[in-house]
Image 1: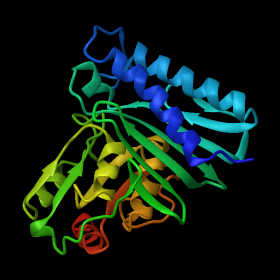
Image 2: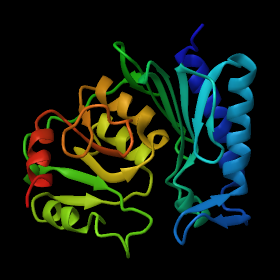
Image 3: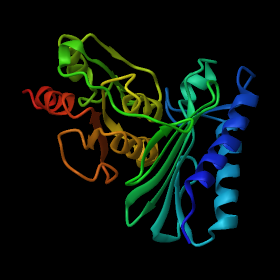
Length: 258
């Protein structure tokens, strides 16, 4: 039996309480890379999420940021990010969240993203819509780039990778009202879904970063794909382009510039 959206929301809130309780405290920080951090709070949140899923759905597969691929039935798969925005969290910058998605046959059908600092629960169920704290949300109606506000993110190896997103950032900065870098891909997507942002792109991610947020954008009337328009945005190598229907093709044109 599949989970319900209420179950995802409840679990996301429970994990979010762990993040909120630890916010602003001193943390034990491990470095997966120079700017790729993990704290003891990441682990506590993830332990709760895995334990809860395993108790209720012992045969489901779980893809999670810190523990990796916990094998199970691939047709019933959870994408879990126990703390999206760890670098923000470690610096006491209150932009972070818990992101949970449940997928059937490699297609997300339930998603919940919880921001514990603002008590904002973004959620969606495939074919039924998207919500913020129970109220329906929709992408913006902004018709062109020059009136749009976008967001992006950069890879952890920005300084040494030739595919570092700086050229795309420069292109969009010159064609829009602004480009923000908030530090949480899941929240970026939810802000697109709720019309706070008009579009979001990022060149290198993991599926757990965007599984829930991508579904929320789609159910809010937006378009989601890989960076250059390919479908199946959760298929590695993972990248994302998400926007309202008017902005999406215009962003795609910019990303395809030589």
